[in-house]
Image: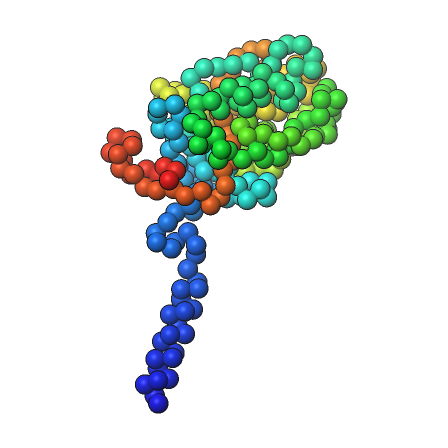
Length: 252
């Protein structure tokens, strides 16, 4: 009788332990949300994604961007080519339909193969309303994008009356150093946000090489740092034959 009771208890314990395991840990499978950054960006939260024929590192910034059940990814390095935010024609500082917006959504995305393109998620991002340009404390609207630039707010800047509140602060951006981006040659560079500096309608917010804030004419050229979302449960695997014999994550 005691033997039967012990056997029954053993079975119950095994069932309970198996029920406590997370889906991503079964069979040692990993998903993107498993490696999302917690307090700062590091190589531990990087996944390599193929652009044309080359693997490029992206930070996995959040587990659930804007309650979309998607992870947010940000390119580690700036693109080689600089572009203007928009033309100089007022309202030039609008993001929706700007040169930067159209480039990221329609041109840059072509570096990915057809299979990856299907994985890109169209998510809602906040941007200034076109009729609010040049006004203090401007109102915002939501647009859907697959590839986009991060906003002044998302990059952790303090609220100012001339910058719209576009989205929510992303926790990893907690100081100027966290906003520094590098060119492929290792030098730091400046890059566009998607935010208008709401003074006159032809200035946009950029991030300086030291991670500080800068305002530039929308017709001037600046660096670009693409961001996009993938489903949180997208599978990843470790590989040693992708980048200089290092062990890195890539999409499965």
